[in-house]
Image (cartoon, rainbow, N blue to C red):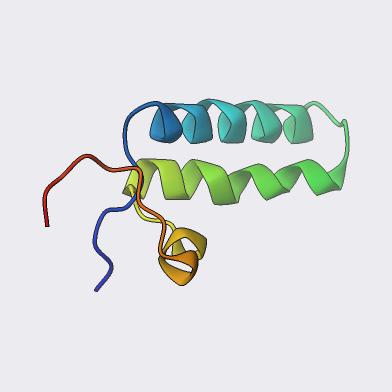
Length: 63
């Protein structure tokens, strides 16, 4: 369905930031921090719908 378009440092950053936001939500810093689920899932999957929409690709794989 979607090809991988998130790679390398971008992927690691999404996973770390997403996890930190979710930890903040669990610690009670605010309900809005649950938005961290989005970067966490896109980092784990290696696919981002917004990147697809704008034609971006940070994955070094050849087409």
